[in-house]
Amino acid sequence: MMKTETNEIAAAERPSAGNERPSAVIARGINLPAHQVRAAISQAVVRGQVSEEEGEEVFWLYSYAVENKLNEAALAAKMGEYDKNTLYQLFRGLYGVYKDGRSSSWANIVRAIRAFKKIELEESQKKNIGIIETEVKQTVFRACDAALGDGMPAFIYGASQIGKTTALLEYQRLHNHGRTVYLRMGSQWTKARFVRELARHFNNGIKATKCWALEDAIFGSLNRYNLLIIDEFHLALETTGDLSAKEIMEFIREIYDRTGCGLVMSATKVGLSGLEGGKNRLLFDQLRRRGVVKVVLPDAPPVRDINTIARTFELPLPAGEDLRAIKSLIATRGLGVFLKYLQKAYAVTKKRKAELTWDAFRRVANGYLALEHMEQEKY
Image 1 (spheres, rainbow, N blue to C red):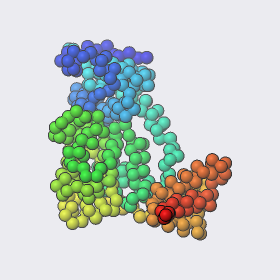
Image 2: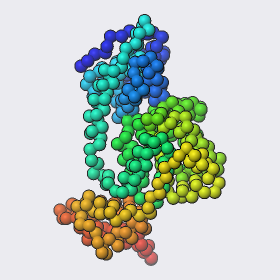
Image 3: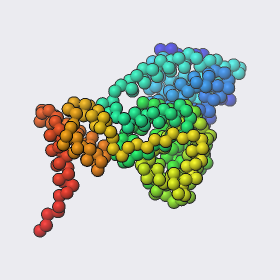
Image 4: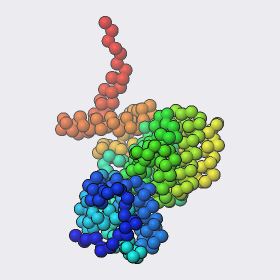
């Protein structure tokens, strides 16, 4: 194992945590807010120790550790090159800083991070059998890529149970470790609640009581390399008062303006009419003037998506009455219910050591529909 490069940390730059020794901090894991790590990286860039792009690799490593609940010691063991003290200094901007004012390059450790990252990303991008390559998923991915790469806000509208959230979560999974942040809007959230929930994603704000401090921490945790996904944002328009809706939308716009991060906002078609029409139209205009990618998904998936799902479950392509019944089910209940019925039919046939067929799917679907329409027995 490569040991820490010899350096004398300037006393003035040691972490101020009372009389607490660094080893005591390490024992608790990485309990360091994201905006402080960002600030440490920015200082290293100013000192010429690392480039901006290389600094993003350091932030990736920090985010990977936070997401996987690894302290410096566990992370060092997983990387297998640098020890825990090196990582402790790195995340706090103390690595390579000497008492006499000199500083050394982070090039070697960045190379080690990139090698480790390549291995980890290859592992995370292995085919997930729970995600099916539907046209809806591919459309959502293209919108997210555009928001991240072109720096324009993207709005995704679609009916419930069409696969929006599943696709967004999969995009976050494949572009995670701090780069993509996913937040689901809740019912009746105020701006203060929205700020607090978003701050939690950056490992800061848990003990803070001042909203402005949380806002500053959020601004300091995002930059142009990040993508912020806000799902179910129509809840901010439909379940809160006009003032709260305006405050939330204005804060989201401020995040975009200040940080330059990619922005994706996803909603049902209720959000389409709620944001682009009537009293909320001016709120939307504030973002639209910055250039907008707008995607309106179909109410039901195309037949080719149904065929893709069929092939995933090793079923013949549905036709005739089978296809009509499936299209009717999806139109009334959604794609999610269709998949749940398929999964149930698969489980039932596997238990019986039988082959999955559309007839088995039909029996499961009819069984659930019978339960739905069952009348209470009268005495």
